Length: 145
Ligand code: FES
Image 1 (cartoon, helix red, strand yellow):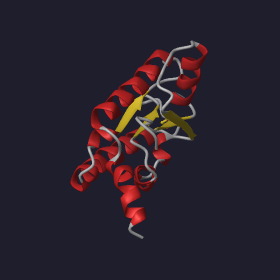
Image 2 (image 1 turned 90 degrees about the vertical axis):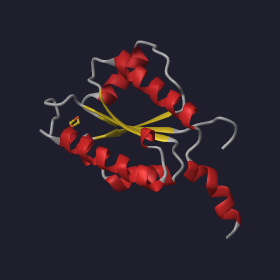
Image 3 (image 1 turned 180 degrees about the vertical axis):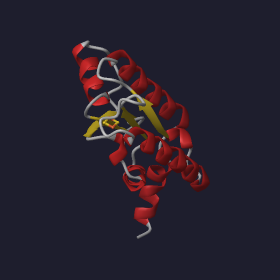
Image 4 (image 1 turned 180 degrees about the horizontal axis):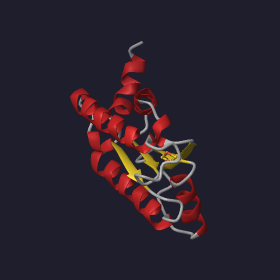
């Protein structure tokens, strides 16, 4: 990866945050182009393994964004997601990866400005933290094979 070209993955619930991202676009709100948005059916479908795979693949930060509590279309998917993410942040810290690289947000379909703010916040975190250390060490590991 060249220069300061960061990659941030945003896993966004189709019912709320993905539409919030659409609204941010329709409102022509600026947010960093480093954000890669993937639509998911509900944050409750995000597994710890998906998140670990994203870091292994070299994403510098990952955020999961879903419906506000009480608004999940699958009742408590977002509550379960928050518990998983809280648990995984602890695991990341134990592994030596800054837990701030992983975050959960709640953004509704009507909150385009909030979605843009979430993207800016994650980008600022990554700039402060630097590249994902897994990605930083990958070329050396590959070269030793
Ligand atoms: Fe949006 Fe569950 S449907 S978080």
